[in-house]
Image (cartoon, rainbow, N blue to C red; front, side, top):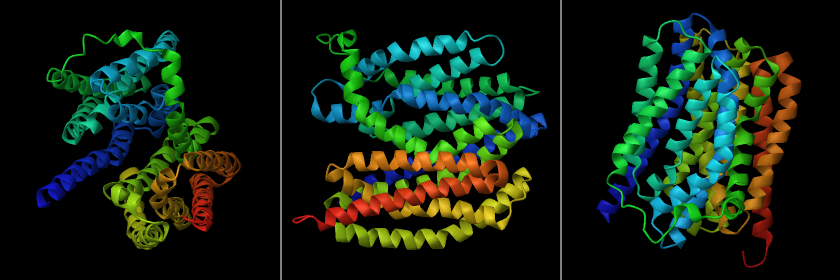
Length: 396
């Protein structure tokens, strides 16, 4: 038992380390772009392409990670074969759009297509890594990709949108190289199964519910950034993305904290989960004070952003509700309430989008963070309301 617990916490530590690369890269990469180019506009110009491309990559994934994990557990077909089938079916949609991006003209678009293609291929194996518990390999791929990208940002000289996208492409290429070396140790496809014989329509229909849940969650947490990208000039887009993305990563901490306890939470009744959620809310409230202080110091001395106290208060209001409702998500899934989570996400995204369009032009980053906070508080009200209704049902 001790060795089992040690192995479980080791996997959690590797996954947490990999997660930590997200906020590290989200700060180091724009800092290097700004300092190497001498202008905040350089990062903002690159974001004009990076933000919609990241959304496109997520849509093209079409819920494949969660869908594949379900298939791995319910079929005798080798996981690698299922991954290959999934990539082939999604290529029917992904490749034509990627080709169109590459043909848009000279400048950054061909590099954008290369990066999107490399990122798509690398992420296609995430479900297989999770299933085989290869968290160390995932950490290695992400760390080496980030390291090579940062080195390229320093060495490539004067930076513009094209060279920034080249560095993203190099990072994706390193991940693919590591993936290729690792794949030599995998079993080959079963000769009796035709990986090209899968029904594209069937795959998209089967994976559609997983896509909706993931896509709605993405919109709920990032719709303010998409709206800012459409409304603000490049300099302001770059500034807002750096600020908002750090606090979005802080929101993701809630899921990371709950992850090692997911199996235990699934076994608990609603009252026990509610007690855990109350403790999570309390610790989150206490942790937000030093977190916001550290973020202010980082923005002030690292990027030269002089943020007012009410901006940091808006950020805290954006982060705290996530810790309050995330412990309940698995309980809703256990009782088949996935649609409740999905529609709550869409409602939060719509609310945040409208408020961002109204508040961001006049209040700047504070307005965008307040809009995002409103969406998260709506999520909290919706999720806790659903839990209360479930608890009122006889026999629950």
